[in-house]
Length: 459
Image (cartoon, rainbow, N blue to C red; front, top):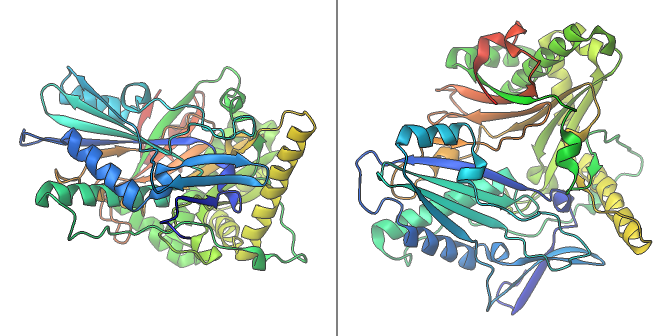
């Protein structure tokens, strides 16, 4: 890909990226413990961000375009769609601000985003790919960064590499005043590699994990009637992690697979106890899988090549199995994410994309995006894990964040495995958090498996 041409474009519909048409937001809290002047200087933040996208992430300073043959990202050498940065200064103390961060107050701390849907009716949408909101306190005690990104261009891996690059560049500018002697730590690559050679017509896969919904309507569809969804933070201590790691070694699975098995069996058991009639109904486990290695792509690929792995059993079957047996099911689900499975996923999604185009040509409403939360299974365990991301390495020159809040997805079965500030995935030297969303009537503390991890609820 030539980046010096007046106009450069690459496709996001040659891989699963185009179906992830949603904004994701993270909130980063930084404490100004020394009351230093110039703490997170706004001009420095803007300058470093614009340098990063114009020099290293030119597609981020570009535009989405929907055309008859797909969806592209297009960018130019002489004009830039720079990420918008907004600011506010609040008259509140640090403890109050921190509470808003922990409770994920997106209305206060995250930039307002337009619709993320890329439609053929609006082939040149004004959809920023990165947006930032900087919140200062009048007391100068802290700064909060609310950062929103479009998932069609980046997944979590690419986003946290972007944040690591931005913070490193900003820190260098803060300390040295220029970037002539600076190289970003994670130089990105673009364009998803060709995966057509993985296609094997003799192998077929079911894809119960993919549900296609209208992106402008799916939040309403996902609300389970009048049930209120609450988020419970589970805390897995160092000792509990060590015990899970030993179990994982004993049964030939990974630590994450063993933890997922605990979460799946625990929530499944609670549902069955409350409603024994659902025993023959579906219990669905899904998890996001980084498919870069399987696709032969660089780990620094800036894209959203996420594959969804799944395993479907009956509620009664999961209830009857031991945790170690469920961990094997999870292991098998992740293990099937080969190049052939990735190709099958893409072909399935590409067929849906072509159907959307056909619907449009024939006057039928057709805009859809992929959403695992809309599945009708009686039990859903929808896992996303971020424990290996460099989340707490985002030092803009003023120290590491005190806390980083993951996205709040108030949908039944949503679960996110999340590091705490001192956590190291290789050594389990600090607690690990799991954010679990369930209907209000589900009391996780009643599960013998999950009660040991209970931390607190967020309404």
